[in-house]
Image 1 (cartoon, rainbow, N blue to C red):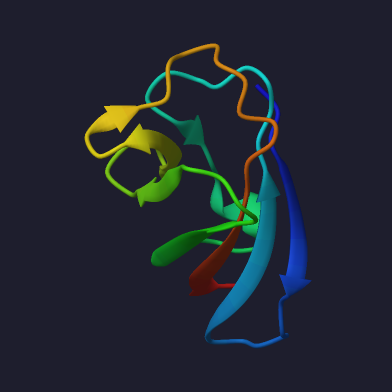
Image 2: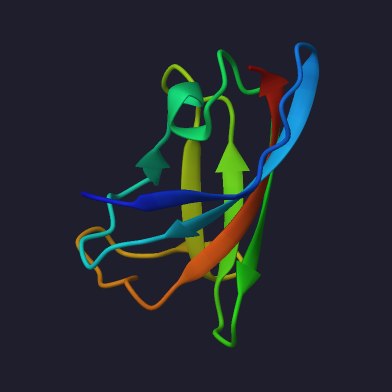
Length: 102
């Protein structure tokens, strides 16, 4: 399980700032979503994350804050149908707007 996260726009700030990040998924999707941590987004905590798929594909990406320490990014292939574990999602990318303290 390896996702790639790169900053698109991440302004400096001492308060709760928002940054935009490009996330690229891999060819081995983790069942129930990819765990993410605040530090992957240069934050001490994630207060809110809003993923939006980029490019042309037929996936919906959500941020689930209720799981693990910081949350998970989940990929849905249809309404109510999550991508299968170990499936190839390497052609899927999204931009994620993350709000939290730096």
